[in-house]
Length: 376
Image (tube, helix red, strand yellow):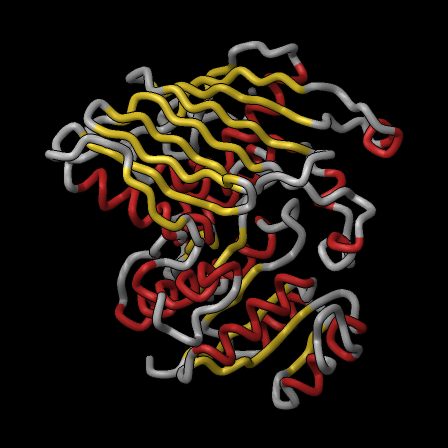
């Protein structure tokens, strides 16, 4: 394979951005097909676009029917960029036709979908990779390297926050909600992948227990959809590692977005937003200088810092596509496997159920477990 015929399903803000980045950033990518139930997303100018996508990609075939695209477009890859609550079915259909998939996160919306997608992946000759771009950020790259060098030791406690300060009706959110309400309606703790994904890269075990609480709703808009302003979950592994996660549905302070803290037996690393300036701080007891060191906390992965094509969420999106396409061309495993994707997705589903039960501690299972079940 020297050319990759790429299709995208879901032409909201992110779907259009990822499709254009794939086409513009990689000479071997052929932007072959696009699919959306709203033709206006293809034929009309959209948010932040200089022209309609039908004008930008005149040789790309547009489909309203996903099954038809899979049957007729002769695709090597489908990028699944539908709403975050409806990824699994689109991924499974492509896998059943042995078409490679890059799936945005969360991978699934419930445990039944997890079982179905896991089975589809096991039975397919195609690759499915998880589009978790926070796993490509500078902090994650440095954290994994810090861990591999033994400077962190064994992680025993970690924390993460994803505080999105934009209000649901703000101008900044118009383009995010243009094709659906999933951001407004999804229970906050369910969108946990951005936070858990980077932390799980330095764990060799899954999260196994969770207790979660919500704050309740404190505004008319949030009350109308019965959604917590904030939710806090605490997870634990079998060996006793604890992870605390804070997620919001509404925030009145202009703070965020992503903060991480990792405590290890030999060292420490954090990424924090300090007065609008993200920084990474770290230290290790194995170094002569054990004081905290500070460097910039920008998202750009170090290996792409001088690459002019590396754009999209500070370069994370480009890194995600680059690693995925190279794995495909070289016959290598998925850069972020479905197993990794489900390990960062399913805890949010269990956490939501815990919150519904008043913070009850719930044991978590995964499709690769012997005692797997779709019942909680």
